[in-house]
Length: 393
Ligand code: LMR
Image (tube, rainbow, N blue to C red):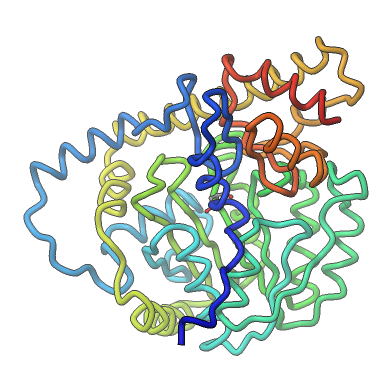
């Protein structure tokens, strides 16, 4: 039965890691997958995580199964980081999930098989895996306008017009901050109008929140979801601690469902738990235990906040370094837009052929759409990157 299988294409993002590993050029640069790297190119374990792990090593006394929705303390602590009291606790339920991707897939299964939704609308462009995750859950996938025809700025009127066309009862996937792949986010005033448009059209928001803390701060970056909490009765948040805790390989995220009232929220949780049970049964513990330990301790929380700020500041410094270096080299293209964008990623404006040339001629790996992981830059590789881009332009 397997003999007739043909090779599946490599993953648009994770496939780059394999190609990068196989590249023997000692000066290769990986700006593909979204992981934070320090000045030495290492993806560090946060100090607050190390302290939490030390505590767990001393205090943990069982490796028995968790509940289907995870550690009991996890949900309230996650909701505090997300909403800081802007949603009544009775209206919201949270499931600990294997990463943000796990949250998206559980949400997709819940919406399709328990709520009866049939379609989800994704920004054009969006994270390369959104389409696959939601279509694997059985949802039809459509696109709404997001960027203008430069590909580098928001087409806000186009976005509103697109939302107005979405049939009531459909789902819209929004990026709370640090839009992946473009780094282009709506302003606070634009978020107000987006929430109003969803409400007016009866469109259910599913908000992907994978980069809290990487735009302007842990609190500031939650403004959009807190605004939805004020304006709409029902929505979902798929959040991740991969990036802001550096817990990539521990696969720790959360699905939070906000409902109109307590009984709807409780029923929603019961159905989402069915979706989990028939998929991976219950979540792994370690990442959730680390996050719970940090979020539940004032000192560790303060340390975490500072460590996220340090990562954010470093990325913003790298944006400036890149823009200044390109300008100093008299680039024919003005790259100052990179400094307006936020989060790990930027759309570089490079086309597929230029991306291929970067890989084939310079061993520089970026996603085919032209997305660059800014967090992979450092003072040692920026010159090489800029020279290579100038050659392919
Ligand atoms: C990315 O967009 O690079 C990250 O979210 C990692 C992934 O799983 O694709």
